[in-house]
Amino acid sequence: MEVRVLLDAPFADGEKKMIQPIVPLANWDDNDSKHERLVWWNRLDGKFQIEVQRISDYTGILVIFDHVNEDNVIHREDVGLAYGAIMGPDVDDVRTWENKACVIVDAL
Image (cartoon, rainbow, N blue to C red):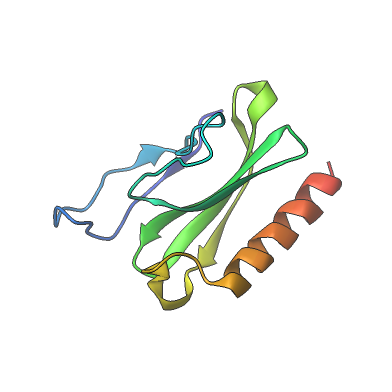
């Protein structure tokens, strides 16, 4: 099943983005992955890739991908981005995302 997200806010080019499939923006094998919509990412248990992807100035989606099973989306939820994460994610936001991801993965 393909999961899609609507990017509703204009980005640097001033255009709104269309509905796009949710796919990992970070490269599993690259610790320095960068993407205009990638706010934060991490790996968990050598199996899961957790990302926060920007969908508007102050909103993102927390997505957990099952990396060993073709990066299937196993969880997705909207999250806020403190201060718009302009200079990177807020420490408290990261702590919250990490805790949520651990609870979700532990429940599998």
